[in-house]
Figure 1 (cartoon, rainbow, N blue to C red):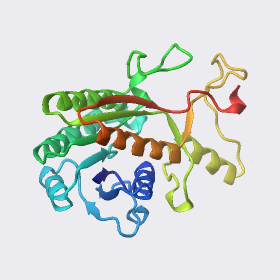
Figure 2 (figure 1 turned 180 degrees about the horizontal axis):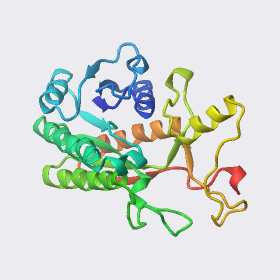
Figure 3 (figure 1 turned 45 degrees about the horizontal axis):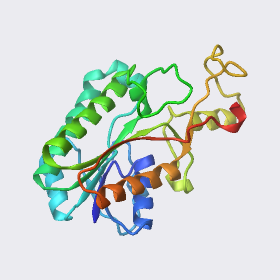
Figure 4 (figure 1 turned 90 degrees about the vertical axis):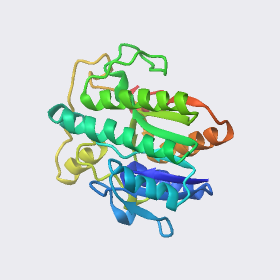
Amino acid sequence: MTWLITGGAGYIGAHVVRAMTEAGERTVVYDDLSTGIAERVPDGVPLVVGSVLDGERVRRALTDHEVTGVVHLAAKKQVGESVDLPLHYYRENVEGLRVLLEAVTDARVPSFVFSSSAAVYGMTDVELVTEETPCAPMSPYGETKLAGEWLVRATGRATGLSTASLRYFNVAGAAAPELADTGVFNLIPMVFEKLTQGQAPRIFGDDYPTPDGTCVRDYIHVVDLAEAHVAAARALQASPGRDLTLNIGRGRAPPSAR
């Protein structure tokens, strides 16, 4: 198998590339480098620079590297930004996915793993969110991820493409310093930025039903998340025609929040 990892030079993508290669899978990175960092791509792993909106470039990458599976992580992901720029988010996340799936099906690639998000659930009123929890996204970002799941599933049913949609919860950590999250809008970097400046981190919310009134979230280490991609990819390989939708989290709050 050769897996094309879109967004493979990004924070999560680079960890997925590392996990896949360490598991013995051949990988190719496809990234427009708008937020990705080329130096994250391991030596020996080809890097194709391009947008998923460029169907011809995607097709060439699929055929040139004899790709047999795709892990699609390339997307815009800032919730607040999506509220201000909904058309941009729908173009990048939904139209980009449509173009990619068209190229994938034309090339008869058999397996497709889609990077979704727990943002598809919106603000739930249950203690434990499962895959059966109703989806009610509260931002254009979450909407694009849910629409992406629908598009992936419909394509699989129509063409026989094996698909998996992975709904990430809150991702943190790094396998190595060079793979660290550089996103300024993610909680862990924001906390350490304040601590480095000698300031107290800002915490929003004081009326949640928790011991101190602050929000409790489900965090998963990025290495565990990357290994979940390997497991999903291999599940599709082992059982063609599968349609999986899976939450990727720990299912419980951090110990300090209990």
